[in-house]
Image (cartoon, rainbow, N blue to C red; front, side):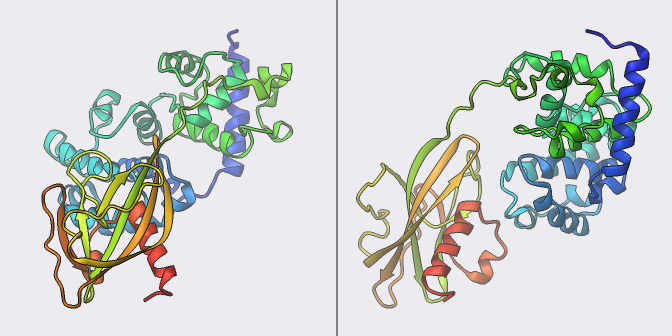
Length: 359
């Protein structure tokens, strides 16, 4: 079913009027500067908005423009990102900034294909940046827009399939505001976040209820159509907290793959409920080890279960760092403040701190 011109205008006006009266107060909504919108989009991927705000402000203080980000020190950049997770996003931001400096004379490009060419920017982020900053009438389709538009138009295509994006894109292009495409996209996002909820949508409060086919037919709970998500694979590890004087033995992970370049306690992957197996360079040095607890950490496709063991060395003994698999160093707390720590390691330090009451 295709709407007539009057219906399109009515839908746009109802949605945009509601957005102006109810939009979320977010720091990046006070600007149209592409660099700042780009940063907010990348930071907000798979992260709660409330979590992003302080990181966004701190990041802009340290790197106020594209040029500053392009010249960022890798260790300082990752340290500033610590706690946001998915560290490849931070690395891609720097690579993207360097690309903009080299290919676009330091100016963020205005054309969609050029925006898409920047490392780390996918279809959604490109459309969002383009619509907000340059008024490109591009639907920015994320989870909220999938849900809202599937209900409004009763679209039965599976949103987990890549091929479905084109169908949703075509529908939204028929109704997107040409004058205010950025506000239109953000209005649908806010609508999905506050009213058109996954379960128990607040239809009575919806500004576009008159245009919603699912509401008219009582099928809101049916949409969107999505195949069940694959469960995360469980992985089991043993981690070893080894302290000598005021330093911990830390391992730096490899430069590619999960948690690339991040620092953790020495860890070994094991089977579930496996017997303790000390890393080779600790076997002859540790005289006692004690298990103090377990943390879990969920990635998009994996669930880590990490048992933490505190290891006691011979007095004044030194453990040679093992470089066979990982780069290992003795690092003090002061040293660690300079390095980015992965989410699992932050949890391990907290477990250690709680076990020994902060000592």
